[in-house]
Length: 385
Image 1 (tube, one colour):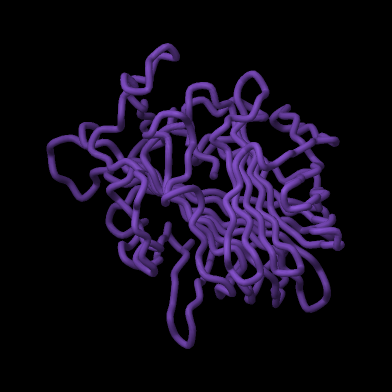
Image 2: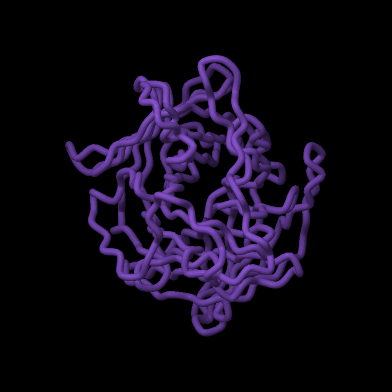
């Protein structure tokens, strides 16, 4: 799950930004079969056959796609950081492109967020970008991982070993990181589909690299630091919107020190309940996986943090339990304020932050780290995916 707004898209032009509507929206009373589908785009369907490295690249036949990295880093002097790098691609519906060929025609829109959590300095930095895929200013390759906007980029390399390079910079910071998979990619959901609603079109194809060894450099306040750590990578693509009743989501990634990982997303309905299509994946140390349904997982919130910028009130500490696995985790942020207000790109206000994890698994103590994403707490995520 990533923070994306389908209801408002800023289309950059050579002159002034143009705000384009997303077209007619579905009536809340419409049946699933009556709801409009995005014209000209492929739907995520069961039975999709993943191929790597092909599927690391762009899937322009789907409307929406994102590549997402988070991680925990430690500098040589012991200073600790969390980071996020996310690229979004949005395909523009054919009827909105126009019939006149042009190098400036907007067929693909690219957006990106980068954030740095200075965990010891208790400061949070972020930056954002948006650009059209025109004249090489932004783009993504098919068949391999390469996505860029200006000098921000993610790209995979095979020599001397498989690794991804991440480069991005904000006004007060920059990062240049190499991440190397320590486990194979993990496909989430059932039959290659991650459900986001009861309508078959409300779905995506979603996989992760749950553990990547990370090394590189950060530049913070003019000081260049060598860092090492562990990262998580998500890649998701589809063409549907969220269900009408969904107001937001809570997403968790957890990396335990015993090399077990957990991904969990909970789609929240406007009445406060959790949508039954919510799910998760447990990844064992040897790479085997176990699908988790909404009923397999219990999440209790018992602390909150309120934003002075957005007035959003966010959960800020959780108890996550999977009784069938004898798993109980205490998850707490390492920095309270990790909120992004992305008014210049995706127009979503969300909390995305580094967390620490302690608890028990099968009666043995465990600890680790992770990232949590919270949307819809500052403003409901209606029709956004």
